[in-house]
Length: 568
Ligand SMILES: Nc1nc2c(ncn2[C@@H]2O[C@H](COP(=O)(O)OP(=O)(O)OP(=O)(O)O)[C@@H](O)[C@H]2O)c(=O)[nH]1
Image: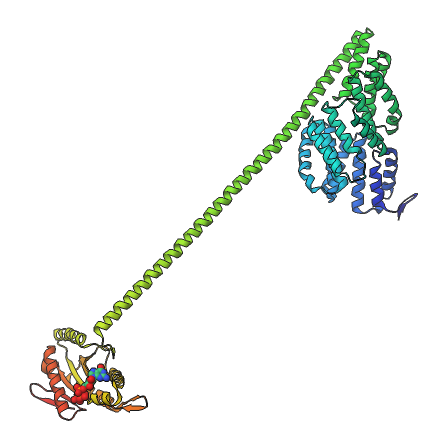
């Protein structure tokens, strides 16, 4: 329980809520309780203080202090952080714009509230927004919209709760549309709902509207009965616009009944109630009554004066009506323009998105092309490599001996001729070794052909270990080899040949657990004796080899000119 001086409030939240419900039900009690809450305001939570601020704003609007109410409502909307309270404040701000004839602002706000509606789920806030929307659209002459919001309000009203507000908004919309008369059951039903809900101010609004219909239907006496019946309630609740409209209605009723003095008094009372001379439908009627009465009484100058005020008011009223319609249309146009703009933007966004997608696709396609190109290029490169490899293989096959990898007979001959020609030009020397393995047949016969092959490969390996890179080494056939030693004098060649012979002899091949030992006979011919012609060199070397074989094998015999030889 929180308290201050003589006031004690045990549950401020529900107390504030109950006080809010009293606004139009029991306005004097509402004021008393509002004062009580203010006394304990220092003990309230922040949210409760904003609720109190909202009630202060409502009261300021009820009293006609629009500026104060608007300031308070705007503070609630921007600072309270309470979406439901903000929605209610916006709804009442809407009404305040209507009261000050700022119709454009009102309809722009109405449009905003309409779009926010789906998100407003708090029942009291939703009902407040719906009733203010219905009233605002009714003010603009948009009675269908007003009816729609009244219907939505009825649907949003929880079961068992009063339908006073939605029924009243419905009656006002139907009434404004000229769809009901004074005897319409809609009046009766709405009045019953509001009476049993304990809403005298709303009930009085309905009675006054029914009175307007009675006047239109030329039932002035009935209207006066009605006005007399609600007079006490009007005075009790002291709602300024009700007091004003009731007095004007009374004045018009008296005038119709020929009770001019009463009509004049009522009209003057109405004018005295109104502060300022701003356009107003009731004042328009008040001046019209005064014009008729004074004219009838023969007071022409006074009648003229009232008539001028009546014309001014009419002008103002008509301007006001067209301003409402215009503002509504303007706001509608703005909303439409905004919608179109949004649609245009979303179209542009869609185009941009498409563009981006196309760009992405182009990049993707570009990438695909690059990948395909790379695959193609790689394929071509691989194909070229394979081609090169094949060419090399073919070239190798064409120039090399398949078993040992050294030059084949034909290529050895060709290359040797080329090198000898070259050496001849520069007077260089070369020596040709003609080498044949001894009794090789026995290897084949004893150990098999494969062993013979292995020995041939081994011999090539041994020989290569004693040759320079530029020397030519070829297999002339079977177990016969030719070696052309470039830039090599005869004696040096004999020494190399003998080193090779010794190496072959001293390096048997281990093959499948067997030591395969071979020897070689070598014939040497040199350009210094035989000249640079290959044929002659071969003949001389071959002859020397023949002698080496004949003389017992495993030896080197060098050609020493025609018919001579040197042993190594
Ligand atoms: N394993 C193997 N044997 C070969 C190859 N080419 C030739 N031969 C064999 O080499 C042997 C050469 O024998 P011959 O010409 O009688 O000469 P040899 O047995 O070496 O006797 P001499 O030359 O007189 O010392 C033959 O048995 C051929 O079959 C070859 O590529 N691989």
